[in-house]
Length: 283
Length: 328
Image (spheres, rainbow over the protein chains, first blue to last red):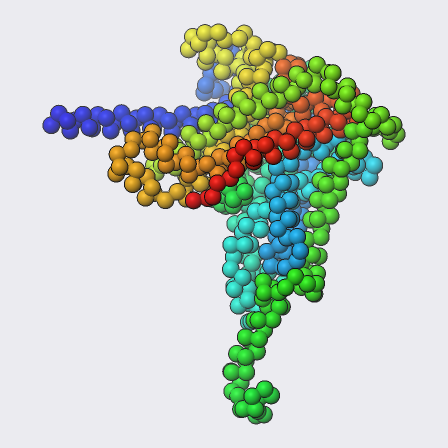
């Protein structure tokens, strides 16, 4: 009898400790974001109160109002959407073309290209930013959305091709052959067989590209200096250069920038994990 | 119906179709994998499909690398078109520059400490998320959040969390009576710790996901067998899980190491935004400063080249020291 209750006690202690680990992980990941949201909707005095309040007593939208009325937030937002959206569409199209070529055609140097893709994936942008800036300014690509989008496309492409290549490789060629025998052309085989089956990979690729472009600070800050062309990260960073740093405004901007990334992310989470598995682990 | 051209027999249409089908299947057009390495219409299509990506990679990745080598030997203003050859002067200057060596030290310190912490937290997180429990998928999603949050936002939030006067983390540490706490976290001498906390928070999900993906492919029989043999949970972790994770860990450590050493945005925005930049002036930050604050592109290029060289050397040594084992 006694040993049984001891086993139960041990099991319960184990259970509690495991659940507290899970809770700890949850709080660690979510608390900074929770704090951002809460800070953005507090009233001015409550924001700076000591001790800080963990649940706001009174809600205030002042930070958001100021963000929309007194700053160029929407200009930056539109720029970010245009640049990231264009880069994503182009990367997916070019990436799918290249991955199809690498998996379905035979020519010299395919293996070398695959190795180069991984190398380029590791490549840190800071090593390239100086020559790229000089190169871009000699081509007149500074202070233009095209220049920034082009640099995002070039930097996301190797990884995009790498993921898509893994997905295309996992699809049996026989499926395409079957379609061809039924009279499909090569292009039809690609559009009706390969792409629908590789959709998880394509979605994962587009999310990665979008998030890389959406989050980037370095390229945008170096290549763009006029205010109406700035993207969100660069534009919003200027809020710190105001005479008085308004934390409510900054937290509101934070919430507004995080939402698109998180919405995308939640919508396609299962594809994302698949994509990470294909891209990150097989390296 | 006319007799078959080859066998002089009357063939039913269905058979003719099958013969043609087989012949087509064996032809190069329909089975490109059987084709030999020679130029043909299909192979050219393949190269054409690859061409746009190749052009972009050549002009925006490979050309800049080469151009950078050239640029490192010149003295050049970042915005002016003229450049004058100075040979290895840029490199000689850097070798004697105390700030350069400090930036090297800071980058190394930052890389080592933050990578180790990310790996430890990442493995722990992956172990937690691997078990079956209610709400696991939700927690998996939450654990990826920090990686998806834009860098600039992560920095906003951590600067606010660690704020000298209103920050909530100093407040919590204070009411917990943790000793030896600095009065101001974002000051010159302690900002490196904030940089590390922030980086670990932002980047540990990368480790977590990669480890988790590998954990899911380990056959459960291995754990069952170890359990039957009387291995404790810790022994199972050390003798079963870790050897299985070896290859993933090698790659993840390498990638994180490279990316932490060359991380620019995080130290730059955190340090120089808070006015304590010297405390976190790592090599990427120093490079950026030379090229875009002092407008000395030649020196910036020399620094990038040094960073690139270190990176190549590091990767080579790493692969010699830890050859990849066979994936079990």
